[in-house]
Length: 54
Image (cartoon, rainbow, N blue to C red; front, side):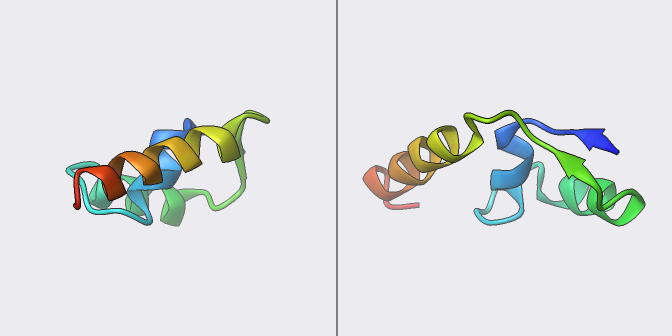
C-alpha cells in the first residue's frame, strides 16, 4: 500500500514531467491510498490546466 499525493494521481491523467515515474509506482504497487481532499485538489489541478490551455 502506498500513500500518494494528488499530484501523482494527476500525473496519470494530464501531461507533465512526473508521468513516467507515476506509472512506475503504479506498476510496482497498484494499491494506493489518498487523502480525502484528493478530489477537490484534483479539480483545482484540472481547472489550472484548462485556464492555461494545456
